[in-house]
Image (cartoon, rainbow, N blue to C red; front, top):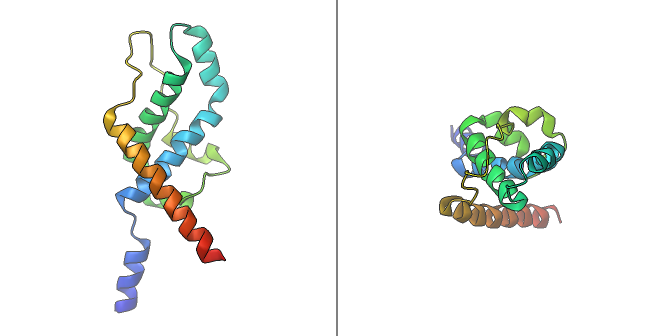
Length: 132
């Protein structure tokens, strides 16, 4: 019985795990969609590219957190997936931005981004030291 309880604890996916996986996917989506984003900026010259890219990361992140399932979270873990195409449904959002769109990141996301970056860095270091 105790073994089963430990198994459930080890394999249960928490919200932080979802955040980590979606943050990695959101950043990877920029590389995956680089050509499309470049074309979008060329067609919408009034849009600041850096602000747009940061906003796309935020929007993809929140979209992904709503859509990702536990199996996908487990497969991604703390590593940027080498084949992003299998996760396309989690980051292919419409680029519905124009010169009137507020492209600034929300304070909530900026705070979350800092926290997630620290968490991923800490967890990655823990895994590296365990492998030694």
